[in-house]
Length: 134
Image 1 (cartoon, one colour):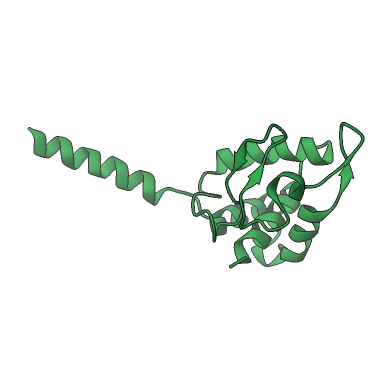
Image 2 (tube, rainbow, N blue to C red; image 1 turned 60 degrees about the vertical axis):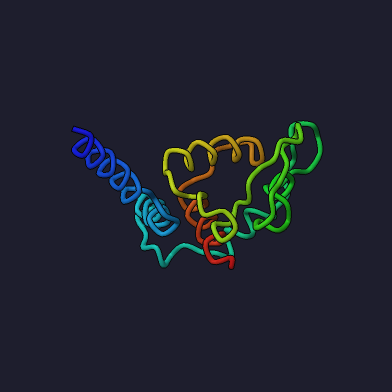
């Protein structure tokens, strides 16, 4: 009785791992949304998006690096000083492993920094840049 249960649990766990998203699958996802090949994504544009400063809600300039630090391999801090795990998959293998979570955080953070949602091209470029950081 225990053996079939253990096998069923192992199958569930391995299925979840096999179905996990990767930066590569996310880049393909965003490229498909733009109607362009993955090769049209630009790490340079992704880095520019990350480092560009924009007018913040409090009248100060903000960028992604405001909370995530200039080096995305380092942990960042929220406005209330809560730790943010590194953005770069090289430093945080859990980053970009769930498309729903990625979309949620893009929506929230793009609204905070850009005062609008990021489009699929920007998201793909952003993931392309972070994926090439070693």
